[in-house]
Amino acid sequence: MTTDYAKARAVAEQAREKEWTRPSFGRQLFLGDFRLDLVHPAPALPEAEVRRGEDFLHALRRFLESKVDPALIERTAQVPDEVVKGLAELGAFGITIKREYGGLGLPYLYYGRALMLTGSYCPALGTLLSAHQSIGVPQPLKLFGSEEQKRAFLPRCAKGEISAFLLTEPDVGSDPARLATTAVRDGDDYVIDGVKLWTTNGVVADLLVVMARTGSKISAFVVEADSPGITVERRNAFMGLRGIENGVTRFHRVRVPAANLIGREGQGLKIALTTLNTGRLSLPAACAGNAKWALKIAREWAAERVQWGRPIGEHEAVAGKLAFIAGTAYALEAVMDLTCRLADDESNDIRIEAALAKLYASEMVWKVADELVQLRGGRGYETAESLAARGERGVPAEQLLRDVRINRIFEGSTEIMHLLIAREAVDAHLSVAGELVDPAAAPRDRARAAARAGGFYARWLPTLVAGAGNRPGSYAEFGPLAAHLRYVERTGRRLARSTFYGMSRWQGGLEHRQGFLGRIVDIGAELFAMTAVCVRAREEEAELGRRPAELADTFCRQARLRAEALFDRLWDNTDSGDVRLAKHLLKGRYAFAEEGILDASVDGPWISPSEPGASAAENLRRPVH
Image (cartoon, rainbow, N blue to C red; front, side):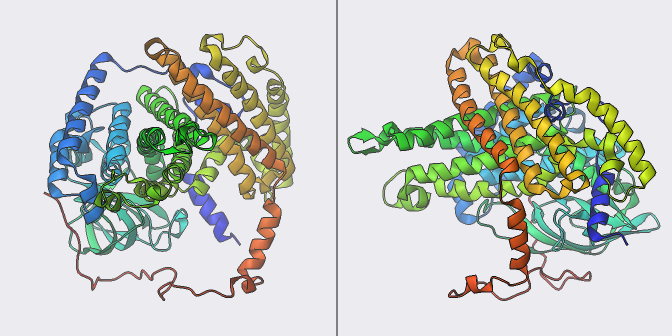
């Protein structure tokens, strides 16, 4: 009998993009092939596009400074309607929508820079714009929509009609095989029933992308948010991003024209995953903006605050934090910049790069925010409103910590991102040795797979012995950063060898070695970030001199230490013991460790029931017009 796990895995595997028709820096990196030529020099934009992008950024900056009060949005937990209208007039809801459909049609690079700017000033506002454009209606229609759908919906999105993406359900997170919302064909319509959870923008949305089950497969639809039978039952509240309009949406016999089906029946999950390939770029952009703001605050505070006769930034314990924040802020912008430029160029397949950028940026900005709060001390824990009320500068450091925490969960949690990237990283191995590592494969299939794998590894393994990273003069045009690129090249081959050792040791069981795979991916992320920061510093050298290389060098030295620690933990770890203990823990063996406390949780089920049917709740939808 097929297990639930096997079913879920099969659903996800069917939705994967399996072809590699364009080169991929990330894919080659995990194969031990450091293709610097794919990212250096980074693709440049046409001058006309640069001028249009810069003009928009200047207008956006003026609007944010003059019309947006981030403290008000934090205090009221709502973006004022006039702010939404003002952004719509600027074209901020159509940054990536082509001009022929009423949008600005700007490159991803300027979309990223716009989100970096907006997110640094008001993270909730950046989330509103990115959820609308990155995963809402515009991106799925751009990739899979018909011309009729594009002409019907994209101009509305560009003018400021807000869109939302509805996939998650009360009992469905990263496992789409459990999706319960249904769409049943009835004449020229589909009838949708179900409940969707955590619908970012869902409270104020005019248009929805809804994922629903059509028979045994998942399909995607554009749905008018004011359709009869749709009820926004509640608006959710969170530890951070208090201004986002995130809700629970119920569908009861909602009729949707068949013409609103995106792509074909059964393409829903593929549409969702493909949309996220570039849609995820919004998060690295926001994270870069957050890190750059943290750097500004850390620098100013560490120079102003004096303890024991010196500014605190001159004390080694604080200097280490400053160096980490500075190097990481520069690196996160470099990762965002490079990945967006690759997306604009369209000559590379960036599914791995975009995923690495999301994973790395969300993890690192959390550490940056934590260090900023620590560096600020008691003032870091105190709210900006409280600081201002007693006459000090109202620095929202604690808000930053709350706001960025969701990035490690949004659009694929860190744990899921590890698995998604790892699946792509070992794709070349599975394509030649699929049946060999499949415990259910027939003996004849395993024998054929062994022969294929033998030929592949006989050619591939010798390439991992030596390369440009072993030659002292390699990458000399990067000056003092050349040594770091040589490290990346050598370490990429070492990473590929480690992956091969893992395949050899665990074969089909490798997919369950999530600790090992997560570290493989994290090492690859450090190498990708090192590459991006060296490329950026080299590019900026003509204008800024040695300063970019100094930041890049500091970051690379820190990244190398992190990578080496991860290599050590590939084989020396507590993974097996942790899994064993966790199984006992779940059965109550260690319940005694919980004695002596009181649980302040409010009683209720762990997962709210979501039976289909009409809603008895008040509709909390609040459209902005």
